[in-house]
Image (cartoon, rainbow, N blue to C red; front, side):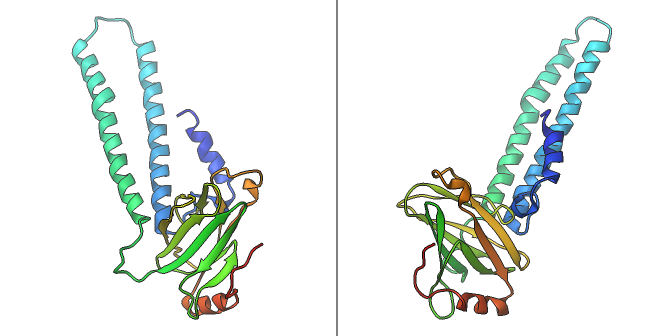
Length: 229
């Protein structure tokens, strides 16, 4: 908890392009909110602990009041942590639901991303004239949910665009799907967040959110056949 003020200061120095504290979509906003709540709560608890320690050191010795000590133990050691953990659980479940794939009854824009050492093979499944392919570049509509369907060609990778939402693993032999949304048109940077070998640090990706009228033109510039770096 001592590090809370330091973390807050360092967060202000972070590169905004990869900052989870500068959300640009509902999933990222829920993560940033819980981070802020936990940071400020930790700071408040730290101040409270310092105040209680100072009170214990400065007050004159006197006969112990066991009832007040018992109340502090039960309230501060059992009830308070229990309430906090329950609240975090409920909020975490709601935050996770924001990233859960929509049911089959919903029409949603889909992009298949296959992770390789050390690049991303991108297939825009719902391009108007058939799937369009790219490397390390994703094009999506702004302001609406879309699905990223993750697979891996070799080892475990982790797909993460911090300003849009949480991480999701790309696992060989398994297909994982995450729902994201970019509230505004723009360019959003991402990374592989799971160590995957020698060039792990050189595995960036870039997602561009377009207005609907501009998305078709961007997709038409992509390849109709699979491409490699």
